[in-house]
Image 1 (cartoon, rainbow, N blue to C red):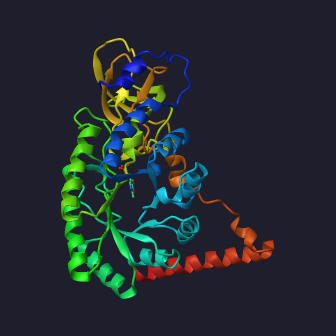
Image 2 (cartoon, rainbow, N blue to C red):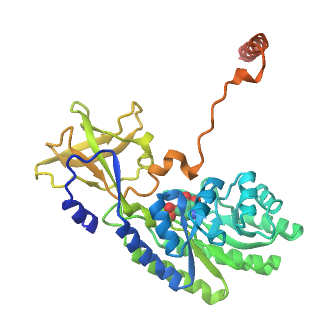
Image 3 (cartoon, protein in one colour):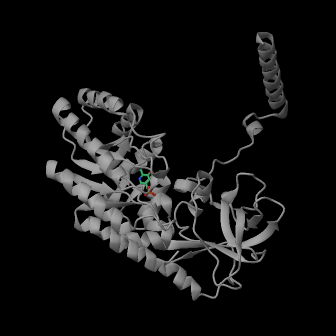
Length: 407
Ligand SMILES: Cc1ncc(COP(=O)(O)O)c(C=O)c1O
């Protein structure tokens, strides 16, 4: 991995540094912002996907750069407003939203809302005055690490059904959106999705007399976890070519893009320490002081962070598996990685480009975990709660009997 970040690391004395710990590099964010500014210069509005990294100094910097934000929850909106974001620069792009979150968004003046079902559009229109509605379409994503169209995104057939409903109910769909999958290493994915969007814009115009004025081309630009991944500039330049082609046919189309990972991943590195080794496993297992329950979740879906060992003495290499310290078998950070044979507990392992979708899982979308209440405190006296419990047990036993009889 040849990167200014590693050169920077080479000059840092990390001995005695606390682990696990993230190191944040504001200058990397600055570089990313400068690169993404090319979209702004070409009239494509940027809405950074806050869910990927909400570190306040990073968010502040993005606000100062004039970019907007893609929010996924009321909590994210509250945070963005507290940081000074203008509600006009927030797009509520999550295709499924809680109704109370929509009500809050409406109250604070958010205008852009995505949907991909009739249920969702109804929730939006009954709570928001004149929303700008974006229909989320499914998109092909064979070169992406994370598929974001398996749960979300309408088929063409369902989209036609929705347009008919919109026409009938006077719901004003003005935008389309899609997500080609996160960490998508093929820029052609945007081309294909935009051609599909173009087809549906024509369908809306010709069959339903509806004009699509906005296209939000989502996130998905990859971070440079592997050397073969083309540069950020390559993706920006190619995507801009597709945008300009589309504008030739739809000159007044407003274009939005929602990068998450490509803006935040390379702004942070995660320092960890080896705390145990199991030499009898094949390959030998190195246990580090973090893992899936500390936010290193994406490796479960086969994402691999580049590893940096610092000025480790050159030695013969052999295969290792790097795992988190929890007892869960799926808590694996790298299945197979070549490391110096002499690596041992106490040595540091740094996961590079760990700024996206890591520590945010502490409370993803900034939504806290449910609270825990004492179920029996809902009934006032103990004898009553005992009766309820006995009744429940009797009911479940009779259910078991029923199953046995059927079998
Ligand atoms: C609606 C939406 N926009 C943008 C993004 C950002 O995607 P990425 O981090 O792949 O750029 C996401 C990620 O989940 C998303 O759901």
